[in-house]
Image 1: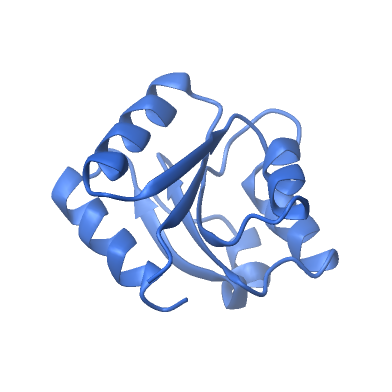
Image 2 (image 1 turned 180 degrees about the vertical axis):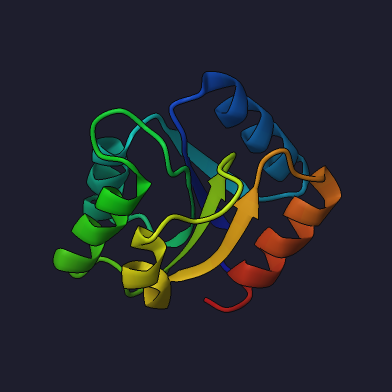
Length: 123
């Protein structure tokens, strides 16, 4: 099982918290603060599970996913939204074939680890 996870979020507290939770569970975690850095990491060879925030300055989560799709970087990666938004907006409909799950913050730590490990097993 691949154990690589990228967390994309503009909130430093979320990045530190999710990284600590997942690393404690034995996973390798990369954190980036925005969509542009996510795209750079994937262009540099990252493959694994991407936990993507929706609301970020610059490229938001939806635009970041669309860019990954347009550049052909979806293969080898699984994308899950990890967001505080109650419900997905209409842009989810156009990208739903590329998004495995919509996980809401706040999340249960054990449930997040279980989901992440399950999703990594798909790779």
